[in-house]
Length: 400
Image (tube, rainbow, N blue to C red):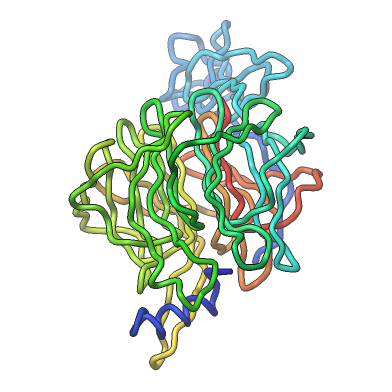
């Protein structure tokens, strides 16, 4: 089994020369109290008239009577001075938006080095395990993305043992998994990356090995698309170099790829438009890393954490990070935050409304099970009492 921890980083850097914790905090689900910048006692008390209740004077939403209200309650959902929307009881207010979407999480790796095959939904407040009549076999390091009104899952590494590298394709709707039998598909792999593009999904790279000793010779850089029925390999003349555990997410009419592990950790940025890959020249970017989490947030993508490979006197080690970055299609910007999830790699992250949701991961051989949301400016911890176990390398995506 290939793992992207310290041992693998050491093996990769040395052999590829030939190949080369923070505790969870309590619930803080409300946004900052609404404020008003206009003068006068009415503004100071949040009762500004509708003519001045706007994004400049209200961090929450504007009621029908012109009051500036907190925008995270279902009875007054909105943000940035927009008109409040009243969310139905069964529809959560997520980051100021009423949303019926959920984040789906599947499988991953936990203690005792054994993969999982449980299915969970996150609605913006809590995780709920989905009782499914059947499910894909256990796996870690699979990849998942949104496809229409469902999610699609591909590949990964199954139970320990020879021959457990996966090449199967599954879709999940509201409550059922369905295996999709295809005439051709990408070869078996783990650590690939996948994202939505138009009416389909794009898959790139990964490693076609389950053993660290031959990972270098099995690194992949093929590009495939899936339309819900068939896989098609895309012939491209200038693909990114082969890698695994890269980060990829949708950005407008393209997908963005960053970093990953080849013979060394990478820091390059690429976009794919459905036909060709283009390397993006940037003056400033996150440091080289692999196993970072990335998801779409509005007209940007957000990247968090991952492992940097540091070299000391000829030896190397992987050091997990907890920095946050945004990419707008042309440039990277590091986000300065007052608090954030602890350093980790192999976390799961997906879009939910106007936020991204981060779950779990691993730090220094400790599996994590905390949940955080990020709204583009600040991270908020989510305190909830589900039995979703600590894990890394889970597959996750948005279920519309």
